[in-house]
Length: 350
Figure 1 (cartoon, helix red, strand yellow):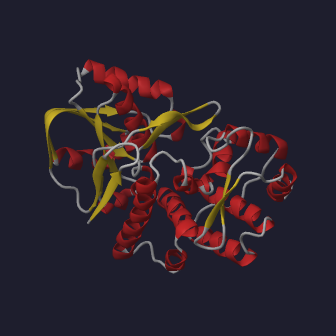
Figure 2: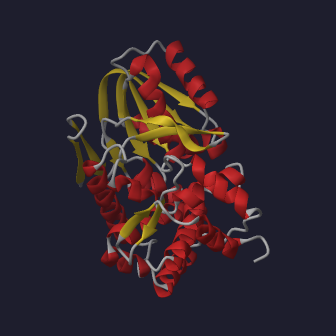
Figure 3: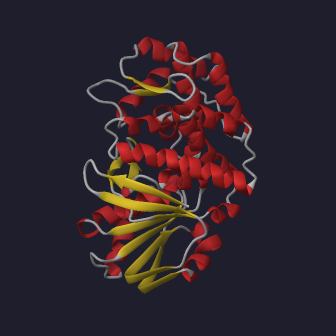
């Protein structure tokens, strides 16, 4: 099936997200595949059998969020110069969200911008990270604080790549699926509550519905000036958790899962979400094997980290919160004492 992206506000950009078996791809130019040893070990041979190009090269970078840095991007750029890529050349992001973010960012930089396509191999990247053109890297101050909005030319989602995905990585992808359902679609959340994610047909339906939701949002708001910011539900809290743990303790989806629980607790405190709704979300996250607790060692320090979030502006923290199941709101004037009261629920002594 095809899910179209059509961005018209800032530029007439269109491309297709294809959810199906990977097709044969032919390129009349130089192509570089960016991947990591784990993905390459499982799937690179299959990918190479589907690609024809004037020149085809592979750049492998270390596997892990801790390598999502400017230093790694510079290494990829150096390889592209060694292979003498020109402005007509193409990059292929072949891996999860880290690979996709860094490949897209590299493509935006090389000779001021060359084309790239996404072939995501994790559930998280298939339903979320590969769609919409967010690219970037982390630094000492936080997650994805250096980057660009840079759209791919195409996205090819093949659920068969998920067959080798470890259970923990699979569950991390479900966190992003739950995020979209809670924010936008009450009926979809109910469907997820009873879904057997191990059933191939159900999984493909989940991918389809999640990609359609993401595309619907991105088509309205490419650069996160409005509704797209809602997709950061759970991320404001989750990014602080990732930063505090040096991106080594939790997968991104795991941190987002905990972040959603924290955001829900704030929404309950503000009267936007019922305790029963919050428990339903936490129950689904727990059922699929995601963490839902985190011991905050220093509430004041955790709170100060919010101000480094990209969604904060003019000294005000923006919290993306559920407003009833399937609804959303952006709260930017929460009293610090109220937020810290909620954070203390997750204190180290709990």
